[in-house]
Structure formats: C-alpha cells, structure tokens
Length: 69
Length: 451
Image (cartoon, rainbow over all chains, first blue to last red; front, top):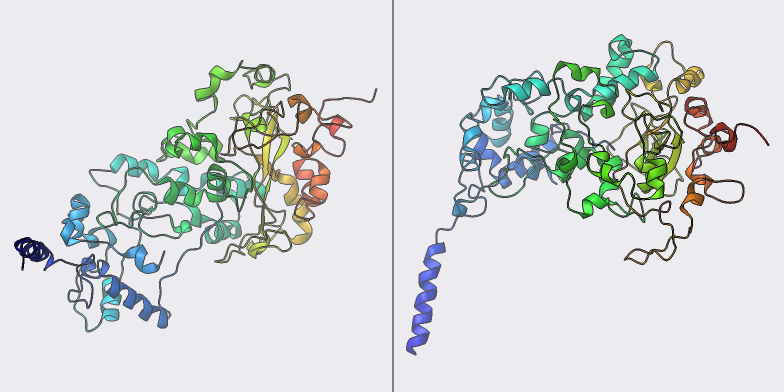
C-alpha cells in the first residue's frame, strides 16, 4: 500500500478514537437508573414513556388552553 | 411542541453540559425541590411509582403569587414584591371592566357569582415570574422558553418577544405586528418591526409594576409610562399640512385632533359575540363567517374610526384625540350569562349593553406611513408596486354625499348587521358616544343643522 494511503488511514483511525466514547445528545437516555429530578428530566425516552403511561391511566396533568389574547 | 419537549432539560456531555448546574449554577445550587417542592430523589419499583412519589406536593410554578419560589430571596426581593401587585399578575384592568360591565364600581363589590366566574373563566391570562422568564405562559401552552442544549430551564432576563409577549398578546398585537396573513390578509408588518424594533424598544415601562397603586389601573392604558408615538415623533408634528391640522394637542378643543392610528393604522382583528364559560381547547375561527367558533365568538379583520367618548378629559391618556381608531372587543351583551348572576337574565342583557361601549379605543401595532388614507397620489406606489386609488387625502376622510369613504366610520348600520352578518343592534345604545349614529353628517357634529 502506498505510503500516503497508509498515512490517511492512520489519521482516520486516530481521529475516530476521539469519538469512541462520545456521549449521545442526551447522555442519560434509555432506562432510568436514578429516580431523581434531573435523572428523569434529562432523559427523553424516560419522560416520553412516563407521559404515555400516564395518558393510558388518564393521569396526565391538566394542560391549559391557549386564549386568543 | 410535545409534552416531552416542554419539560425536557437538554444536556450534551460533549459540549460540557452534563447537568443542570452547567446551565444555571446559581439556581441549580438551590436544587429542584428547593423551588418546586416534591421529592428530589425517591426509591421506587417502576417509573410511574417514582413519578407519583416525586411529584407529591410539588409546585409546578413556584413563582406564582402566594408561593415561596422567588419571593423573600436576597436576589429578587424588590421586584418580586412589586410584581405581586402588577397588572400582568393581577389583571386589574380586566377585573375593573368585568365589574363595570355588570354595573359595579369595583371588582370587590361584585357578587360572588361574578368573582367566582372571573376566577374560573378569565383569570388564566395572568402571568408569574416563571411564565415570562423560564417558560412560555400557561395561556400560550407552557414549555421552556429555550429548547436548545444548554439553555433549557434557563432563567432569561429579557423575555422572548415570540414566546412570551406575542404568545399571549397574539391576536391583537402579534398578528398586527407580524402581519399574520391568515388573520389580516394584505397587511404589512408594522414599520417599526421592519426596522428591527422589538416590544421592549418602545415598552420601557416596568412590567413588574409600581407597587400597591397598580390596583387603581382600570385599563392597560393607565399604566405609568406607557409609550406614546410622540416620544419619538413629536418632531414630525408640523411635517405636512395634515399633521399641522390634525396633530393631537394638549388643549383638545377644536375637534380636529386625530389619534395617530386613525391615519397610520392598517386593518386589525376584531372579535365579537364572546361568552364567558364557553372556551374550548380549539380556538376555531370561521374564516368565511359561516359559523361561530366555540363560545360563539368570531374574529375578523376590519378598520373603523369612531368619536372619542373621553375627548377633552385632560387626565385621560386618550383625552386629546377627537377621533380614534376603534376595535370591537370580544364581548357581547350577554357575555356573562353563564355565571348565573341572580339579578341578570337574558331579558335583562340590554341593560348590560348600555353600560359600556363594545367598540373601544385601540392602538394597533401595525403602523404604516402610507395607508389607504394617507397616500395622496396614485403614482406614489410603494416598492412592492401596491397602488392606492385615492388622489386626495382629505377626500378619504371627510366624506360627504357622493364621495369619500364612509365605511371607515362606525355607524349604527354597522351594528344592525355587522361585517360577519351578526345582529349587534343590542349594542347600539352602548356605543352611542362612539358611533356616528344613523345620520353621520349631523350626529358627528360636523353639520349641526340642515341648510
């Protein structure tokens, strides 16, 4: 393999290593492990799941209506 | 905006935003439960059980009056104390007008049916600290003001024009200001908007109020230090013959004083036949006026000029203009019939109609220099190519038999059958000091007798 090609591949592998442990946009997504305010309110999938469950139970908080002010 | 988006605090570890303390270290030091109550950490077997336990005795809006969220702190003590009596927090003007329309001098004198009805159907429009500085107002749908990573649940010193100001002041300010073509087709945005002004460039009054005297406000127009056109435009008072003739002046006696909006406003939203207690989630508009929306109200674009009932009252903020732009407000003679007021019945609603006008002074936020009243020469088309048909500014307004545009002026016939087809004749008596009546030439005072 030509030297330039090898250098490019090595550079690519080197760059990838910086993102190997990249956290997701919402790093605490997925199953809740800490039942804390922040643990839930920074976890999109957890909030969505709870909202869906509350909706099935008819326990969703009352939403105010927009007034034509 | 989904409910998830409304309550999600967005983090991103790669950007160094790993917790709420990275977004707002000052308020994070208080802790979530420090403001909102509830339990900051729970042991539970499942998510729903955890939700229920954590939210027990939680306060969604800890900044509401009577809550301890923002009050008493070393940081916000004075502002919070003044805000507790502000017009935004207490709706003083709305309360005053509900009382007056029912024949009472003050809200406190109203029977319990009116007070409870107001609390149930009208009080939702009040704000709190959080509903301006953290999330969208409740009446605008809630949700954090900023949905971006690193900004969720941030305390924003200057509220957003889009998500706060015009989110509440929508149909009568936001639609004008931004020329919502679905509501006011053909309009241009307010010229100040075009020049990059925001609400706060003009509205420099203190929204947190002056203190206990705020309760004396009977309308928003009585708030101290409201912006006036002359704050910037007094220098234009003698720019042309029309300004020289019609500029409102302090002595207000010659009947020629015009409010600026009479010449420089475009059409704006009007509402009618509204009834308290009949709101629904869907704010439906009948664009073709073929049906009423929920609660019976309609919204429609129109421009009207009327006589000023308070002309000459020097202590009134509008007292220096003989002619004003007027807007039909969302009320009807039987607007409060659902409150079961003992001495008030459907047969009696005419009495309610005589209490106060339903076409009222308005300050449309849709100012243009050139309107169909001010553009003198048809060749003076604007850069969009819009052509105005009149060639005499005076003829536009001083209508006489055969020429001029009498449609600008409110007449009794406009209420016998309004633009939407509704019969508002029950409101004629209430608007007798604003309308030009049956015979505009004489009732307006322009001509006192036949020649």
